[in-house]
Image (cartoon, rainbow, N blue to C red; front, side, top):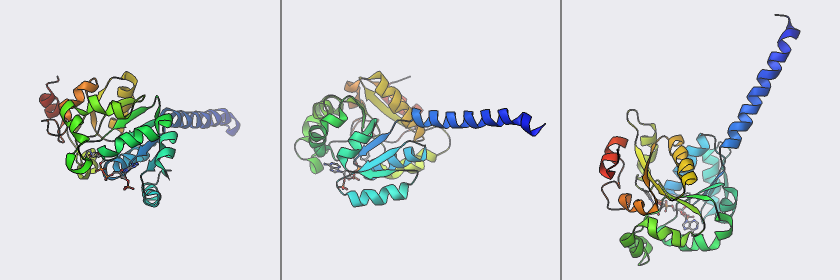
Length: 234
Ligand SMILES: NC(=O)c1ccc[n+]([C@@H]2O[C@H](COP(=O)([O-])OP(=O)(O)OC[C@H]3O[C@@H](n4cnc5c(N)ncnc54)[C@H](OP(=O)(O)O)[C@@H]3O)[C@@H](O)[C@H]2O)c1
C-alpha cells in the first residue's frame, strides 16, 4: 500500500491505543492502603501489578517507601491520612484495635468511599474492645468505628503467607467471601478480588460477615465450591 494511504490507519490505531490506555487507567480506581503490613502490603502488590494506582501507608513511613519501591508499578508511599485522601477505594488492614483511631482521625478523607476491611478481632492483640465484634460479628461492629463509609468485609480469612501462592494456583480458584450493604461496594470489591487472582463469593449484607469471621467454618482458604458449601450458598 502507498505509505500515505497507511497514514490515517496508523493515526487511528495510535489514537485507539492511546484512548484505550487512558480509558483503562480511568476505569481502575486509585487504591489507598491503610496498614500495608502482611495482608495490606500483599494486596497492594497484587493491584499495583494489575495496573491500579496504589498508595501504601502505615505508621512507619520509611518502611512504606521501601515497600513501594519494591512493589514498583508506580506504587507510592504516604501517611495514613495521605492514603485515605489518595484512594478512591480504601483498604483498611490495621490491627483491629487501631480501627477506632483510623475511623476517627481520617473520617473526612474516608467519607462516602468504598472501604475494604480485612481486620479480625483478637483479645490477645487488641484488648477487651475486641470482645464486642467477637460476640456480635465484625459486620455489626466495624461500622461503628468507620461510620460514613461504604464498608465491605473482604480478605479476612486467608493467611497472609498463602495469598501469593493461592493467587497463582491452577485449577479451581480460592474464594474470597464478601459482605456489604452497598451494591457498588460489592461490585468494586468483586473486581478487585478477581484482579488479585481469587474469586469473589458474595455472602450478603454486612450482618452476614459473621458467617466468615474468625472461628467460623468458612474462616480459612477454600476453593470456591467448598467455600460456598460451608456458607450454605449455591
Ligand atoms: N496475617 C494474616 O494472616 C491475616 C489474615 C487475614 C486478616 N488479617 C487481619 O488483617 C489485619 C492486618 O493484618 P496483618 O497480618 O497484615 O498485620 P501487620 O502485618 O501487623 O500489618 C498491620 C499494618 O497496620 C499498620 N498500622 C498499625 N496501626 C496503625 C495505625 N494506627 N494507623 C495506620 N497504620 C497502622 C502497621 O504499621 P507499622 O508496621 O508501621 O506499625 C502495619 O503496616 C489485622 O486486623 C489482621 O487480624 C490478618
